[in-house]
Image 1 (cartoon, rainbow, N blue to C red):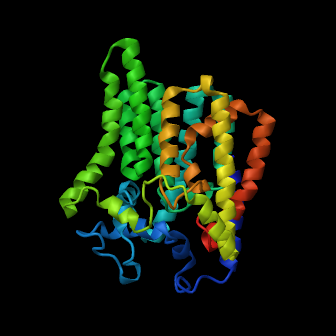
Image 2 (image 1 turned 180 degrees about the vertical axis):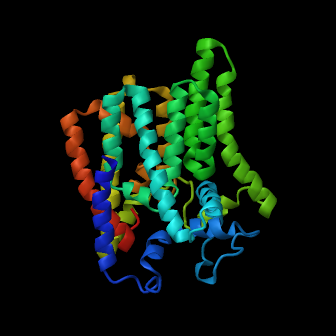
Image 3 (image 1 turned 90 degrees about the vertical axis):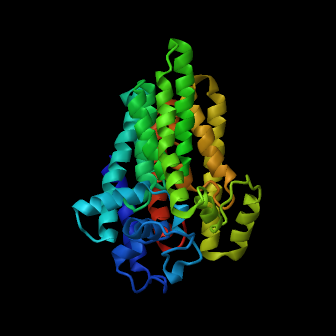
Length: 361
């Protein structure tokens, strides 16, 4: 099933490769054009060279406007570890590892859905997840695959009350992306519920362990640069501030006025906003059926999506709202789930092309 959803991804990549490349990357090989696209460049840079001692330390001159400190180390640490064993060039290695980790993310989502709702729902949830328009990122050297695999595993282990393992998986999530705090929130809620039920403090291990990933990165940042929050300064270089900016509709209007691929980007975000509204409507409608740890994860995840100016409801960021795939498979009929997945697969090919050629999904 997962392999079938890779067909539109492959088609999107082939069509994008047939178009004349951007002059800025024309000198790169096709593999490097995919592997070093936007954030991919920074992950490979960190894997190969690590972090500098200043905000722009060690950054190539052509990229001095930004900083590697905006990116958490989980994914590049994995690449560096694999590279020590399999000495391929980083661009090639990153694509291979991303595909393997992406498959692991699919398996983890299946396990999450099966744990909460059984294998029939798990099959539907995995189909919706694999066909999601942004799932092409599972085959690219971004951190989504590792984060989703860790987050889904942690949420499933929380439900099984395997607190130590849930905390360790959560630590991988928090060292990979700041949205790992959603896993910490889920673990904290699960721990409180279990403490009230059984009067044991052991469940507190899960949220405490989960926090160690991010805490370790902050401590390393402080030792390396003297600024534990240098990653926030680096994110500001991309104009991504946690300020719950309400100018998103203005940005869409600006994209439409600019025309061309800016217009396509606006359309993608508006479609993402429609999907997000539909999710919220369904959540409110079925609120009495929701699991509290999953709801806590969703609330914190949404806070990152809606709170950061310059981010917005892109399919890439909605992709990590894992409980929604589980709930959708529960609430939709099998036939409706298949129809939604088929439509989503078509959009997957389109967004893969737009991502590689011009538009970040």
